[in-house]
Each structure stands twice: as structure tokens, then as C-alpha cells.
Length: 137
Image (cartoon, rainbow, N blue to C red; front, side, top):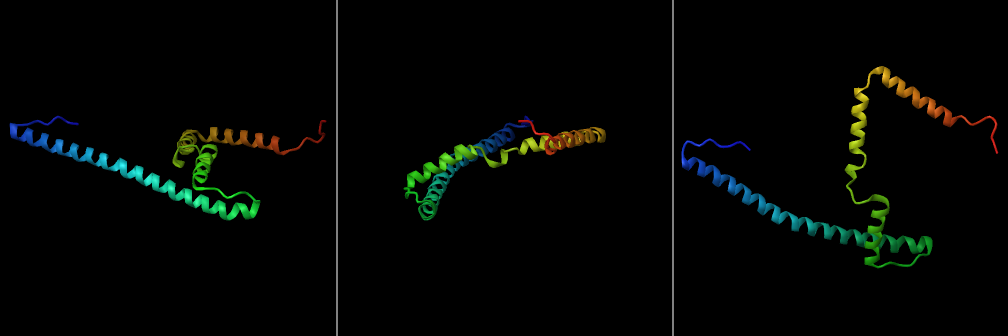
């Protein structure tokens, strides 16, 4: 932040008051935003729990002969599936940065380096695809 050069005390004081008011509105926004987001998260979890419970109780007993589940079991199932299959990161972080890095490295390579890389992949896949003429047992 640049330092304000003031020719008079009133001008500096006005600038200070503006910045203070801006900070107050920012802290008020943060104070209000967190509880609203927390309530939205709880409502979405509750709604998603009821959806999972309804789908389970509709499909699983008829298809596989499983028992009906309650709401808290459905929420536990959501959390368990998130741990086992998805983790707790957002889907935008899954490989997004990695792919951008790979794309950048590819662009930085010379045409000769690119062709050498492609040839290496071809060699690797041709060895994997061609079966041995004499299987060993």
C-alpha cells in the first residue's frame, strides 16, 4: 500500500477515516459471511443425507436385499465414501495444476525433444502390446 503524501492534517485524516471505514466493512462482511457459509454447508449436508437415504431405501432393498438405513447412517455413508473415493479436496485441485505444468513443459520442448518423447512412448507401448511368441511357464 502506498504511503499517502498529505499537505494538510485534514487531508491525511480523511484518508485515514476512509481506510478505517473500509476495514470495518470488510471485517463485518467476514463476520457475516462465515456463519452464512456454515449454515449453507449444514443445510446441503442435511439435504444430501436425505437424498442418499431415500435412494438407498428405494433401490438397495429391491436390488440386493439389503436393509433400510436411517438418516445418520446415510450421512455416515456419505462421509465414508468421501474418505474412500474422493478425499476432502475440491475437484478443481485434482491434477489441474499438474496438467498445466505438463502442458507448459511440453510447450518448452524443442520439436526434436517432442519427437524423442513420442518415440519412447511408442517403443514402450509396442513392447507392452506385442505378446511373447513363446509363453514361459
